Amino acid sequence: MFEELRVPVLVAPMAGGPTTPELVAAVAEAGGSGFLAAGYLSAEALGERIAKTRELTSRPFGVNLFVPGRESDVDLSPYVRRLEEEARHYEAEPGDPRWEDDDYPAKVELVAAQRIPFVSFTFGLPSTTDVARLHEAGSQVIVTVTTPEEAVRAVEAGADALCVQGFEAGAHRGLFVDDPEHPAGGEVYGLLALLRLIGSAVDLPLIAAGGIVHGADVAAVLAAGADAAQLGTAFLRADEAGTQLAHRKALAEGGRVTAITRAFSGRPARGLVNRFLTEHSPYAPSAYPQVHHLTKPVRAAAHAAGDPEGVNLWGGQTYSVAPEGPAVEIVARLKAEAKAAQERVTRRLG
Image (cartoon, rainbow, N blue to C red; front, side, top):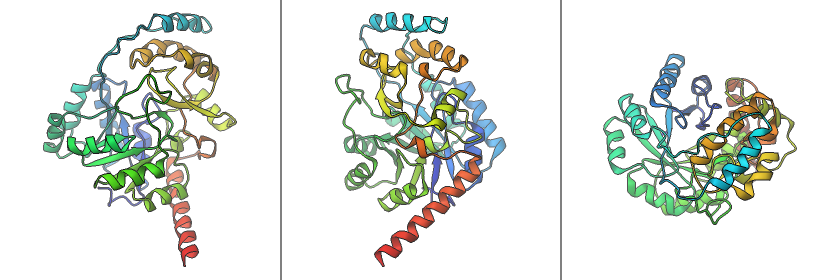
């Protein structure tokens, strides 16, 4: 699927701003590719980003869609009250904790009409009707999976490839169902273990994601059976990324551990530990996207104040050693490091 890439590196679809058309285009021009993030955007806004990316590169790229889940019936009022107190720190008001489908049907139609080469899905499975629609448009369908069981279901749904997400990954876990009784939403697997298990269970091209920030990591997942590596945290400090200032500073400073939390969105996600995460994680319900909409104005106010303690500092476990600079230089560095790792293994094995 990705044989034509000069560098088997893909920019992860980091919703909420970090993955920009400029970033995807820069990595594509450097020999890799990537996925625009459709999450939180209207279909119209996504169309504008697709058009902008095509202005910047003629190379193929993908789009990632969030599959809407069922509306949670959990009582949100206790968490709403907590957020009212939190909002007062920033002279803001909590948002409306509403459920909505992220404009999903319109986005499926858009990517099909635009004949996007690669369409990936997170948080669940697309319907067989949607898979057929995309196949008719010439798109290849990729499903994000976090367990071998999800991988088998994705194959049955007609996926052409799988994005295998290890627990090391930053931001949201792509699990199909968030188990509210489980702190991480469900079973957790390290990336190499998950590649081995899924590679033994299904026969599809695999994209590896989770904690990959160095070329040696890319070499490792290729050796473990992946066809390409998807990197998010590694590009958060790229010049072309839309990462906000407080987030960039926290990543650059290092020193924080990471943890999985529902505090910001109502769905398990890995971020750098700060005051908001520490204070609210024990009380955050499994209710996405209601909690996302509830906390959004508070997070925006904290960003405006430049306060890293009140925002979601998404990042993978290896964030502190991730590079910064122009995306083309990051890709070149990853390629050189991967080649050096390959040579080390060859010398070691004889």
